[in-house]
Image (cartoon, rainbow, N blue to C red; front, side, top):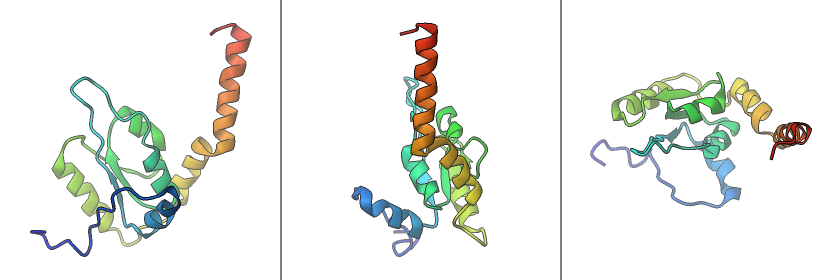
Length: 136
């Protein structure tokens, strides 16, 4: 409120799955400030980040090993976990770009990794390997 951003920043809260693609496509940036807990737990797989980027939304997220692996070199803006300055700088950087939106490179990386057929193929390879080696 003190920065006068009420007409620009929206916290939408819980929405149905069917509403998400439209919201991601309208957004200028999706921000996921994941952190690691004192016990070492961290976001295992930020599927919400995959969904946002898959809809063409620019993504700013914390630089953690588990989240970094999602994009595997695709376009994503990583921030220092727990640093509000790093988070703010990354968001401002994204918003200052002349073109924000559909990044086909990032979408290609995501499709290769998270498409249903790719996931099924990966599971199939794991199961075949386990059967072949007799591991349980």
